[in-house]
Length: 196
Image (cartoon, rainbow, N blue to C red; front, side, top):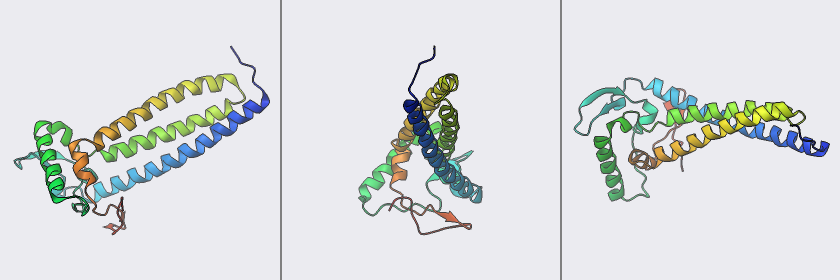
């Protein structure tokens, strides 16, 4: 069943979907850049002793955590605005959590995966907005692109939920207190930080 829409409304849809494409592709590129930096850091520090996942009693499990996801490369610098007791408590909670649920800690913070996943979903959504822009003037492209958009929206919501669960688990809380540099250029970390 086709709807009869005014020409003005069709142009509104066209502009709206085109702007959505621009926004989604811009954020997709930002996340792809973050994913790329995380992968470069992980490849540069592959085999580093801090990438070995160890149990609370320091036994080597044989698992390797991507360097970016260890939250300890190039080092761990506790935020001076956070009380030492809070840092120690966060570390103790992280260690206790990892002892109880080692499978949750073997992958580290998982930000490398989160960046790559978000980039893929955002870029796929951006490509879908091209179909929706064309669909501004034709019913069936918009109809099918809307279903694809619903799927991409569900994937994006899953990404948001997983990011919050990673950020607020004990490993994420402990990592959030780290203010060590994360800018990596020409094989070296700069003094710039993610959060200032």
